[in-house]
Image (cartoon, rainbow, N blue to C red; front, side):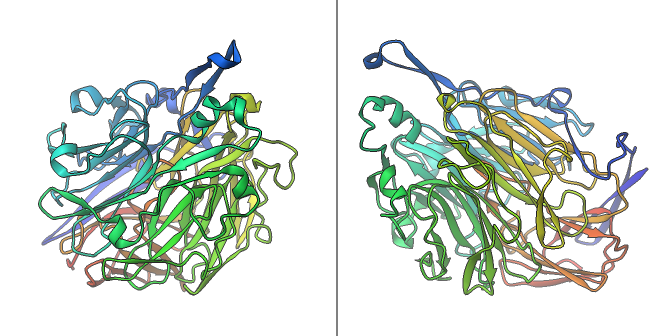
Amino acid sequence: MKKILFAVIGIGALLFIFINLSDKNEKGLDAFFSDVAKTAGVENPSLGRTFYNEQLGEFDIQIFIRNGSAWGDVDNDGCVDLYVANPDGNNSLYVNNCDGTFADKAESANVAYGGQSTGVSFGDIDNDGCVDLFVANHEESNILYKNNCDGTFVDVTKTSGVLFTPISSTGSSWVDFNNDGFLDIFVTNISKDPIVYELENIHNLEGGMFVTSASDQLFKNNGDGTFTDVAKEAGVGGPSKFFSYMDAVLNKFSGISGVSYSSAWFDYNNDNCMDLMIASDSGSSPLYKNNCDGTFTDMTVSLGIDGYFFGMGIGVSDINNDSFQDIYLSNAMTGILNINENGERFSNKASEMGIREKVGLMGGPETDLENEIGWGATFLDYDNDGDKDLYVVASGYFVGGGKGVTNLFYRNENGMFVEDTDNVKLTNNERSYGLSSADYDNDGDIDLYVTNATSENNLFMNESDNSNHFISIRLQGVKSNRLGIGAKLELTAGGKTYYEQVKSGMSLASQNDYSVHFGLGNNETIDSLTITWPSGTVQKVENIEVDQIHTIIEGDK
């Protein structure tokens, strides 16, 4: 019998709530997953749309707009909710009933947009404690919804200043890049989806596929409910470009970013300013260092990460517990695992650490398959042993590419990754794109949500039932932004120190829950927990118990 304790460390109060959870594992395995999307009510098929090319006669093909999902507690009941983008129907807001099931309340909440949505993310515009929602769309204007704190949202796209001429956006991420206490919004854009552009010109592909990229946007929060796009002044917008995929294959774009697919905010050099990485297709995936003065410097070449092309999704975590965040980049060729060397350089250690992907547009290692691409990716400690594991979802490029591709799960065994997809029950032969993670049932282990293009989506409930311990931290900023995005946590247990950050963006078109989860192995006590907030406040938390979900308020003791 698992017993989970919720502890809220508040100003002048400490509230404890016990929840008993029955053991669920009936298969004799320590840790595995079960797809419970149907029983939970979140299967929501994200199907493609049909394209007909008159010049080719009776040519008919499905086009898949990469879509994702985001986790956020929209009603502040302690159970994280799920928003799912749908490129061919209404989006869904699955409100968590706190009993393992969800109810779609998108209509009543006024967020059931019915266009072609791609990436979605939650943030808090005005630090009122109610998460707001950004919806990125394909060839339509994006939408910013403000949470009214009563179960409904209002569209503030025009009044907030984030409305722009429709192009196509792939996703968004929230960050306080200037540490003023207000969350800003970064939007990745393309002017034409590469797949759509290819199909419209499929009879002219002898010279390679051509793509037009659009500048990204960094919307600075003015603190009054409005935003200003400062991407150009900050140095992160990137120029609009027109180029061929073949040029990228021939390495003609080393050090030059291409089409932006996803973004991730984290502090790679531990200077307390959030840096930005963009997964870029047909060019290098740039890493911008935050200069802590409102501007950024492109460090892609000097950090040694400029030689990788066709970037799709991003996963970030400190996988070797040296206090520096490492990067996984999903790719159309093979995945890249860049290990952070003290914030001064990155080295791709994928092969020597066991990451040998079976996917790749050009037929990567250990495969002769083509038209297969890695998309969303995330690190998680699925069995709470203290080591960060990796899950990557994949798909064919389009239906004409043939059969489905299995997603890949890598278990971390003392710093080496072992592909173990079948054993943990995460095999999925659909065309998967988006991936997000959260402990949706508050049982102390991380669950996964996958969006598929050709079938119903998956909610992989973590069925771990071992003796390992954990702790989960939900931060509440006071001087800092309310969600604590950008905070650093240093936890020591059993003589071992673990490091994490409250990061944003990552994966593909998706957003993980902002809670910070630590697997503790067999450690039953925590020696120390130190939080460095974006405001610069350093907070030491004492007498904190394991196997609990804690809410910690900035500056409280």
